[in-house]
Structures are given as structure tokens and as C-alpha cells.
Length: 144
Image (tube, rainbow, N blue to C red; front, side, top):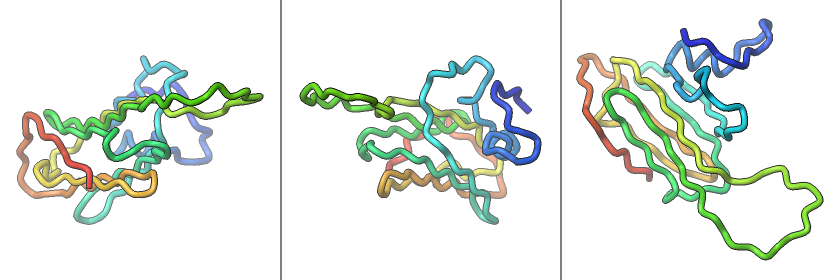
């Protein structure tokens, strides 16, 4: 298990713990800067597939790139800078920032049939399981 810089209290299981057990999440490594903005991710394991749900409001489908390279799933998003008139904010708590997350996929995954769907600010990535093991060198995954 990877060491995690931020640790949750012992009385509850965190998303980071689940990710480290099911899918190794490289974006939460020790070298991660604390000021980087990463979207929240739900990890789901079902009988025939894994699922990732990214909470990414403010992005468009065209902003994303999802690729599988050597058994690592990369989810990237580029933020489009919108020119807006100067506002006199008293407080500005959110902004849309580019991000990249990488997940080491288990060997029992069917790499050729990974799919992704973007709906209402959530990207759902479905990662089907399979019996035999084969890793593609690189595969771009279209977002529906």
C-alpha cells in the first residue's frame, strides 16, 4: 500500500483507502502538492466491472482526455479560460482548474472495452473485468 500524506481519522474508511485497495491511485502520492485541485472520485466494484465517477462541474465533454497506457488509466482535463469582465469579488471560492489523475488498473480488466460517459458534470468510466490478461500499450477512450 502506498503511503498517503493526508490520513483520515481511524473511525471511518476514506476514499483514499478504498482506492489503494482496489485501484492504486498515483495522484495521491507523497510528492503531491497540497495546492493542486483534484476532483472527487467514487470507485465502484461490481461483479463484472469497476466504475469510476469523477465530479467535474464546469467542464465540457471536449475538455477531457481518457487514455489507458500500459495498464494505467489517465484522466486529464484542460480548463478553458473564459474572458469575462472584471468583477469586484469580495470572495472567490472556486475556479475551474486543469487536472490529471492516474489509476493503476488490476490485471483482470478488459482494456479494449473501457468506456466513459459525461452527464451533468459527472464522468462515469466503466472498466469491465475479464478472465484472461492482456495489456494494451496505449488506448484512447472516447467520451460519450
